[in-house]
Image 1: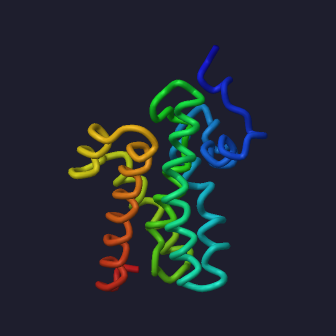
Image 2: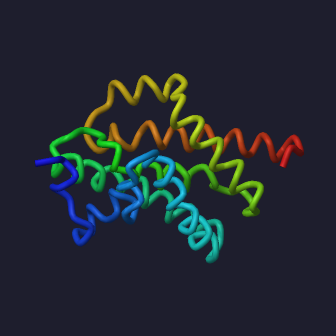
Length: 159
């Protein structure tokens, strides 16, 4: 039995872990999971920045359970199809960033770069922390690094 066959999109935890189904992409599921986060970024920003902060923190906190549960149900730690961590990381990337096509594109690129390249300490956490927290932590750190980078680009007038 394949690990993916142990998950179902009708299970709400699996549905979220799979990034609303985007993690089922046969190629680049992390990229598709990040793309799936973009409508959430826009929707969560509508009520204002404090709602966005609360929504993002909630996505990170419950993400530990969501990702851990999906990994346990699959019997595989951090399977590529589990992309809720990318969703949360992209939400973090856009924290207190004015929303425009250019900031969204720059945030997407920066987050994917930090998530793929995993510079220290992201790489350390990716290798040393396990379970749901381990799945989430490297993307949380990538999101924070991308957010700081995005704010720097904005501050120095590059966006």
